[in-house]
Image (cartoon, rainbow, N blue to C red; front, side):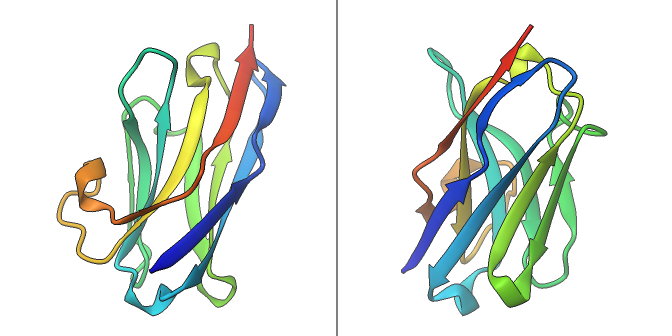
Length: 124
């Protein structure tokens, strides 16, 4: 099992920045990839970004490319999401996820473990 705790959400004006963190614990040696997903009220959970935990390759949704940066600190077992130039449509609960055998980074089905989520609200 892998446990994850997100932090860093909050309220920010459009154009502002926020940084999310996700601290992992447990069987972290088994992690193949980690990702960030988000879910807005009344909408399905959607892919934001992902990273191959070992080699560091990154993947982004088109809607956040150029504005968000995913990174990890393996020594600290921590995943990050730096969000710049935030827009009201970025408002959602953001979840970090970890998977042992992720085939498609953008598919939530490939991830085995999920954090509790952190709220990000962007005001216009």
